[in-house]
Image (cartoon, rainbow over the protein chains, first blue to last red):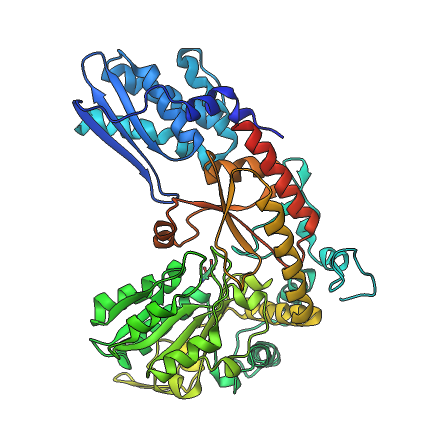
Length: 134
Length: 417
Ligand SMILES: Cc1ncc(COP(=O)(O)O)c(C=O)c1O
């Protein structure tokens, strides 16, 4: 079976996320929800050092994407994050990996599953919401 | 259609011959044999339906009820014959009790909008169960908000059956005037005891509307034996085309109902000031109907009657028992819904694997299942899950396809182990 998307990084990060949790103290909060499937992700941002934690209630793709995102944005500025989000969205839509995305390339395979691209991008909209409106 | 050959497991039905009738089933998906286990969402179409619809467009088409010319008369006949077919199919007392709509959803909305806003009075209550499709919940919420009726929810048991204690409570004060309830859950696969429900409602002065969307595909329905006041279904789940649905209602109910939509075909006479309504069923069929689709539905009914409901039900039972036994053997898999009387719609969840990941990974193996909330979001909450995966069967489903599903699920379990 073609399971390239569900390679180890995605399954591993969804089963054992490194940045999961609801911190007691944080500066900004954003939420992404997909009414079609009921999946939802909350992100909590500590501005100092751009630490992101997430609480994911959803599929492996969404959870892994949230966790990989939290790792990728650590220490970055909001402008750098906005640029990274654009590159990431291009990659999950086209399937073309991009060296600047590092670990996030693990989700490039989602491009083959049109109905699942939203799962990968949802945490990024939640983070954008946090950074824009917090 | 039912030939002499007997498959080892399915003595009731010549499944190989049936599969030949469905052109789409011989396709490959992602390079794999196509295994279609999503008939509960919409069924595939047999050649007979496809041909009937092509024939109308190629050889026998004009608008209906309007032309004095040959083609219009021929087409009107072909269209109206389907009304007789549907009436016979569900044993309606008369052809005039059959209203054509777009789908089950529209049929329910029609009842909510017309019967609901006239016969039902503010303060009357409509009762639905916890396991309704949104199609049989939202129209009653809209009626409540527009007209001041109450909406009450009948509980289901943990196994997925109607809780008759809850029924007693909901009906206790005599305010319930309409029980709108499914004949088969599109999530749990449970059949409801429709005769008992109808008797229960009638004894308490309420009418009953049955959502037959799922049940009509698997069981012989006799609206008079059930004593249903309203019965709705969609053509597309019954191997017919999309765009055509049915509302059955007892003649005296239809007679008292005002029109739903206004326009051509539904009037008796029109002046600039006012119009009078045509008699049922035409009163409820404004505008040019889905002529081609209706004729397709007629072909679909001929098709399932050619196989026969005895054979269809026996086949479904074999498949369902096989599926329950096979899926129960998969570690970490939990079947949602354990009703005594249940059919070929099976929802399940797997430990540590989200339903959407199941569906995507099965799809890559050529296996189509549905995942999500199945248009029954409140039911998901009642069941304590956010979503489920669902396999549903049709007349063409093979036991081997259930085995393929099980093998696919085992592979998924390994990926997430
Ligand atoms: C039980 C039930 N009711 C109603 C519907 C609505 O059918 P349609 O979308 O064809 O109107 C469905 C279809 O999913 C169903 O399964």
